[in-house]
Image (tube, rainbow, N blue to C red; front, side, top):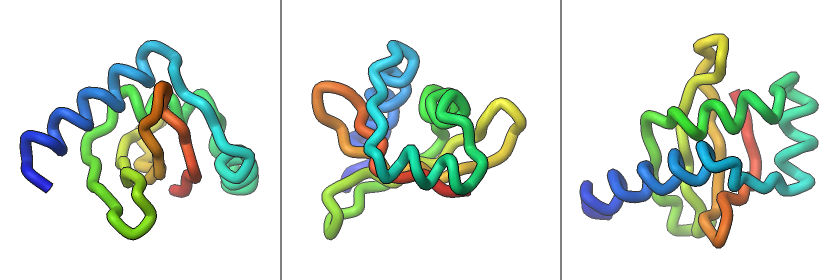
Length: 90
């Protein structure tokens, strides 16, 4: 993946999150709940994401960002019309 594409994707992820255009899969909601992660913190971390990388096997993006308490989390997303959170973990 070319650096420009990753940078552009990171901007798209941040923008969609800031617009509130985030949808959670049932698996992501369950994993967040199990890990004690508030869904608002996931959106916060996506809006301020610092890194992302393409996962060709899964056809998803692995995103890193920090929540309101400066805790780093990893969020797996699929970019469609909205940002679909596939799963989340800290």
